Length: 486
Image (cartoon, rainbow, N blue to C red; front, side):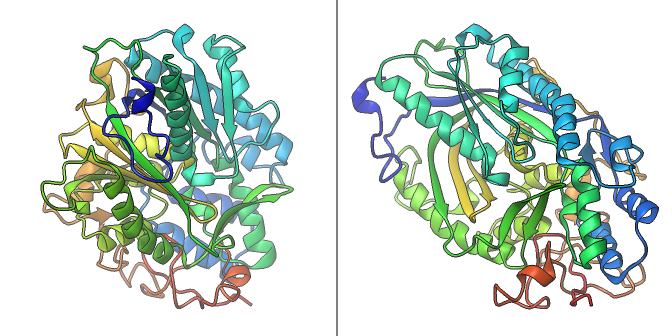
């Protein structure tokens, strides 16, 4: 690539037709345990007395739309069965014990598919929001992979669920800088989260402060990785997984208090207000229009492309976020099939999830162009346009997909089969997803009937955002009653 082809105004205007950036390998690694909703019930009943807040959270937990969540340990893991929640030191030790090996396995899958050598990797861009140690976890991942110690590393923090896409955006800029110097760039992107052990801290707050907190119902563990190349010196016959066509980052004004991950002596506490699904859905359309107009590589065929012309890899922050974007952009569940499937089978693994969704999306035939989108604290919106090349499971390209065999429910159906229930209607937990983005709850199963669902901390956040508990949702599945807990 010549220097003139490098889009110096890519962040502020239009991208060039050919950035020559591509994802050459993807790798995803989930830990071996898949925990159903009953796991939270078990821990809550073991350590906490019945209360109105706890009852509400456990009701929400049954209707998030998540069938299983990936975790580094089962419900009897010693760390979550102590008299008190684990300390931040214990959480750090757990991350080092499990997060680093998960990351190494995900990286090796991505490197294997790429087909290159660790000696050819020029940069490493990593992210996590569930570990704050120094040196960062990326130091140990690089060491375990045998990458030279002089490698240029960047560790991104404070960006939560948008971290995977922010890492790809950062990697893209590094690669373009190398292109300007006519140097090869092979950037290893790594995202890792170990959220499951935070469950006791969340349950403690529910019990002590009688807050309706949903963090205990959503989050899971995962590591994912990608190799991003600028094409300089690349074998022209080697086919990439995705081309990167352009990207956009923006902050939704005055939303700092709506989405976050607050520091706490017992780790971190999820902040997720009722406004998030509405804010997220409203922000997607203008961002999409701006990005499409800035990317000449998208064939416009005498008209501006619409959202339905693309497949969508949306970070599955919650079922109401998925269905809110689906409705706002006039999409169908088929457009978002990979997001639904990852959400239902594994839960929300924060920054590591988006690469898992892209990995799942490439396993089946679909539209040529893809929109990847994620939301993080700020509220930050990350969006990227990609063009697909390879189709088929990662195992067909020399790597296992996610390290976990395909799971089936009691009726023998896979998660993918449950998404459409064989008739094109998306289902979660055996219930059809309604037009308001909720899995319809049976009144016989849920004594209060479907109503508004809870935010991560209703008492702390709803008043300051001008919303009442009856006004909004917090990005979960079905609507459940939300009242102030006295």
